[in-house]
Length: 196
Image (tube, rainbow, N blue to C red; front, side):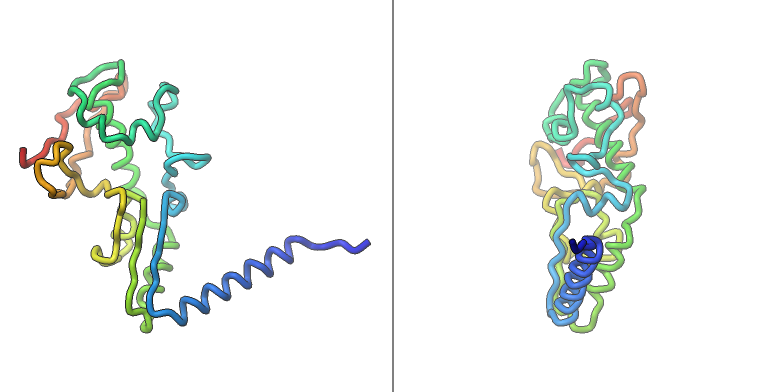
């Protein structure tokens, strides 16, 4: 009975796919990069859900809350205040403080650098990155801002929850807030819209 070495088959299949991808890149005029949460894992960031989900420590203490629930902008409409009931804007801002600190302190991984190098090939006329990531790593890795669309926004920009203007403004560390470890709520003054 003959045996088949699956690792050789997989390796050959992967090598063929890599060679085909390289050929396409070397013969194209445009590249569209699409990325989601998995792109940040090698930078040490958690995904939105699944086995690599980024876990904000208070969520481990409160199973009734989850990452998706905490990502909802409704938290910014809640009453301000510190409460161990976790029902205030201050609790929501503590979650975003955690995310802001994680995303801004992480560095883009090698994959971003490879994409940047591909974008600089002489024959590439058009290039674009469409991402659902909010970490700003495409920009941080040197991409032109006009070549990036962050469809869910970015932790580097804020906007009014009341839509008083259709403007964004730089976060400028407005999410570097103090969090009370007993209540898991922001204890410092919360950011507010500079226009209304």
